[in-house]
Image (spheres, rainbow, N blue to C red):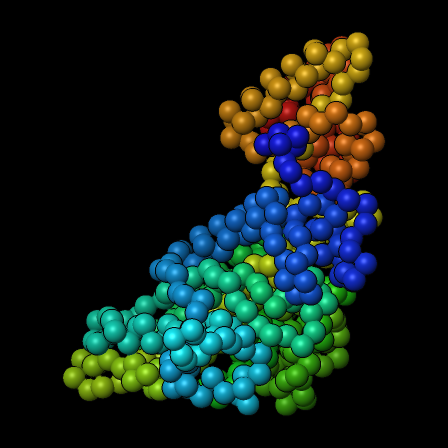
Amino acid sequence: MRQSKLFTKTRKDAPKDEVSKNAELLIRAGYIHKEMAGVYSYLPLGLNVMKKIEDVIRKEMNDVGGIEMKTSVLQSREVWEKTNRWSDDVVDNWFKTKLKNGGEIGLSFTNEEAYSNILKQYVNSYKDLPIFPYDFKEIFRNETRSKSGIMRGREFYWKALYSFSKDEEEHNVFYEKMKVAYRNIFEKVGIGDLTYLTFASGGTFSKFSHEFQAITTAGEDIIYVDEERRVAINKEVYSDEVVRSLGLDKEKLVEKKAVEVGNIFTLGTRFSEPFDLTYKNEKGEGRPVFMGSYGIGLGRLMGTVVELFADDNGIVWPESIAPFKVHLIELVSKDGAEAVKNKSLDLYEKLLGAGVSVLYDDRDLRAGEKFGDADLIGLPWRVTVSDRTLASGLYELKNRKGGEVKMVNETDLFKI
């Protein structure tokens, strides 16, 4: 993409009411636009990152047998009344509205009821199970506070997969596969070393649920980490009894601030029984479907990456989810302007032809402005074409993460 065609612009300052580092940098770099507290629009660069994250997650979900679909945002009151979660006394963060022809509907804040209601039409026999449907969708929650940028929004984009199994044994097999899939996701987006499988309250149907908590001072959770075993306990379930039951040494646990970037739950039959979601086993006996849920907030994950890796100059994207791999900088002088432009355009087309994604800064700006924008935007590699290139045949190559700068020829440039 030519940067001159990118309608967004960088800015020196973020909105005065924005206090989170992730939102400040993403707004300044032109990735997102703040509509109101907890609500952000994703601009072209931001959407590109979101799609990269989505692709990483989609591959892992498909690899474990997930089947992608799309559930509606508008939710029927009657469906949610079956589990008593329509009531404001039970769930107090619904966004609800009234239909012109009468009746109320809600904007979905989670998906258990929606999936159970759909699957009831298609599950009859044990031969129909297991099923692992998932979707990416907008979720709405009427949060009292929203001050963590895209890490905690009133409107956000997430992936939710729900497992429908014949029994707990079959469920547990899939549950373990999802632990691995989630580890793979966080490894691929660059935060694997900083993310811990965390034991949390399991609710009614299991002793524990599992969160994936990334260590960051921007987090709102407190966890106790065993760094050697790479597991943690959420403060909400932390006790001597839990520590002993997990075979952990209390003396080795370190208190850390963290943000939950994913979670997996055993649901049991809590959301199948109210919908009469049952199947006939081999003996013809009716049995309730055994369920699990597995969620990841894509915006929260994106914001966490920014919080973890940004430096004093701006964002630092891992290559796997960067909107572009290369930031191509064209520096023209009065004497060699046309030659530098031709050289830059030639390299741009060669990179695209080799399948390399490129943001080509062809704007008429000074070198300092272009380099400052490049650091703020945070693409993995910066390649500069200048008069020096014309004279030596070498390009200046900078690695955004490490800051190393070196001169390389075109052959070596295509090896990055």
